[in-house]
Length: 396
Image (tube, rainbow, N blue to C red; front, top):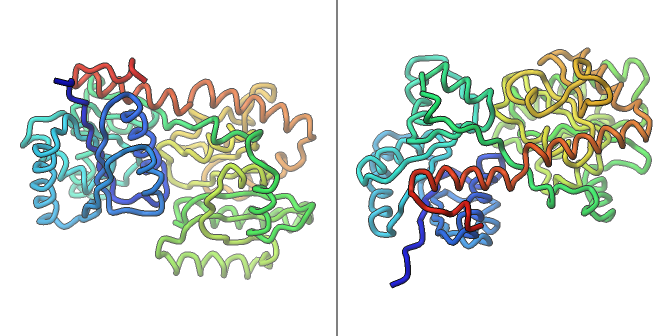
């Protein structure tokens, strides 16, 4: 009789966009490639086909519900899947489904892994309790040392249960040499960028803590100095039903006289080409990023990046002004500081072609060395192996 394939069940609310969603797909691919089987429970989204292409078993499931009764019912349903499909391990990547997954794991006796993807706010004891499910795994994966420290501080999680596994970047997909000029031209056309105009890109979903208002403020400061006549600021990201916030951003743009200079373009599906089309990439978050994949994606595409110096970006960006120029891979600025952001953008735009190429080469090598997708896959499979006494990591 053939030996049973290790079966891993991942649960994620949606598969539209984001680091947790991409990690779900990438780890499903790693499990399948190692001879295992991966089941993913999700409500769906634009990346479902990409997940199916890995060979994973995708099942539509009410994974986003926060209703306590539905969470309990979901736990019953997940336990049934575990028993029927011979699931060996459950991996939860978001809080609401993590409660259902935890209950199901405890009922069935299978190992339970969580990945703590976000620096969740804790404004009350009830919210702290809700968030704590992400620290209740048999092993808790933190996506940065910042996140690991946060988990220890909040929940007293012992170090033996914690693993820091950085969000991996696919250096083959994010490779400037693999992006055809036609893709770059198509992105610039979608954005309405004229030939010869330079682009400052801010790619993030439209929510206040991502700092779009700060970017617009920095653009206004630069416009007053008449230093950005050939520059367009692109704010790329889904509004995700936040129409009031999008309208407020557009009003800020109009009030600043920047409607021809700053554009809200919605979701951008071709990020490698978008970064190739950009002269500078900005991560302007005013609250801590648990990892901040946009900063690593920009670096691996050799695009100068400016990030705020809170959360995990200081781990991934060797930032000026604190870092020597011959080692820097970008800039780090205080959160919410429009003047500091404007200054860094001005410095990035004033770089010579040689300086830009040198920084880009350093940045790409930096990411490939420390934040690769292969490292993330290997280290995650090692977590599974440690709990299942399997050898998936060795079989890839």
